[in-house]
Length: 431
Image 1 (cartoon, one colour):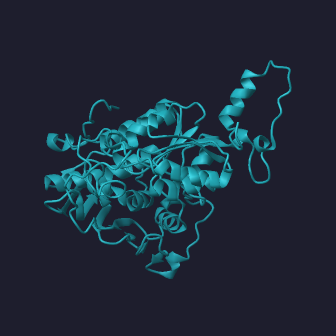
Image 2 (cartoon, one colour):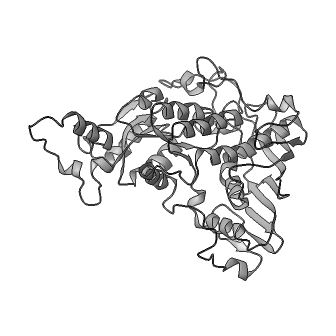
Image 3 (tube, helix red, strand yellow):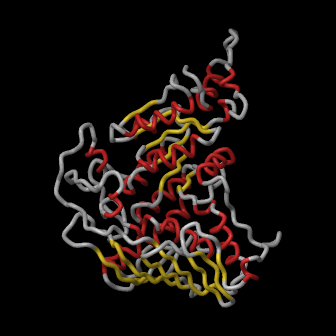
C-alpha cells in the first residue's frame, strides 16, 4: 500500500477481517497520523467526479486543504483533466501516492474504498450521479443547482430515505456578510420584512456558434452528454459555456441564483418552502447555440406578502423592511444598512442564531459526515432554492404569471406548466 493510502474504510475493514489473526500487524506512522495529519481511521476517502476548472481549482483544492480528507479516485470524460488533478494530489501526498483515475463515474461510486464523492459536473448530471452515489452508500457533496424541480424532489427524498449526508456546494452561508444580514433580518432589525431585491449577472454577450465541430481526441462526448439529448460536439459548450444551453443548465438564473436566492430564502425563513406566485420577462439570443435568458426581470410573492425581485445585472442583495434595510451591492461585499443602529446591532444570546461554518462548505461537509447531521445547505434546502429559479424560467417561457403551490410543488390548474417541471432523460439513463 502506497504512502498515505490507508483510509478510514480500509483500516476498519482490515481490523474486522484480521481480528482472529495472531501475527502482529505493524501500523505505520502514516496510518496513525503524524503532526497535524489525523490517523487513517479519521480520514474521509473522497472520490472526485468532474475535474475541470472549478472541480480542481475550487473543490479538489479545498479538500486538499483539509487534513482529514484523502482523495482516492478521480474521474473526468476529458483525458486531460484527471491527470492534471492527480498532479495536485501527488504534490500533497508524494510522487508515489496511488490514486485511481477513470473516465467513467460509475467506477468511482462502485469502489468500496470511497466514503464520499464530490460532484463537479454540468448541471444535467448533478441529480443522476448524486442519487446513484447515495444508493451505493456514499455521502455526497454536489455542485448546485438541480436540473429540474422533478429531479430536485427525487434527490431530496433519496437523501432522506438513505439517511445520507448531502451538501449543496456553495460558500455563501459560510461568508460573514451573508450570515450577518440574514441574522439581522431574522431577528427583526429592519422591522417586518416587505421585499427582497436580488441582482444576478446577465448571461453571455453573444449567441454562440451552433456549427458542429470534431470531437477532441479521447474526449468521451457521449458520456459528457449522458441523459441530455443526442447532439453533435460544438465549441463553446465544454467546459464552461454549457451554462447557456437549456439541455444542460438554466443560465445565470439557476447558476448564480443558487447563491443569492439562497440567502434571500435564508433571511426570509422560507428555505424549506417557496413563493406562491411568479411572473416576469426575459430576453434570449437568437440564431445561435445558446438558448437561456441572458437578461431577466422576475417578481415572486410569498404567502406572507413578502415580494422577491430578481433582476439581471450585478450581484447585489437587499432586504427591505418596515423599519429600514440591509444588504450589499456586490457579491461578498460589506454589509450596508439604512442606519448605523441596524449595522452595529448585536444578536443576543436568546435570539435566532443561524447555523454556519466559517471554514466553508467542504469543511462543513466533512464535519457533518462525522456527526451525521445536516450540513448548512442540505438537499431539501438546495432543491427549494433551485426551484425558485426553475419556476422563473417556466414563467418566462410561457410568457404569463403563474401560481405556485410550494407544498405540492405544482402549478395549480396549469397542466402545460406542470409538464415543464421535469425533463425526459436519454436512454439508457434514468432515475
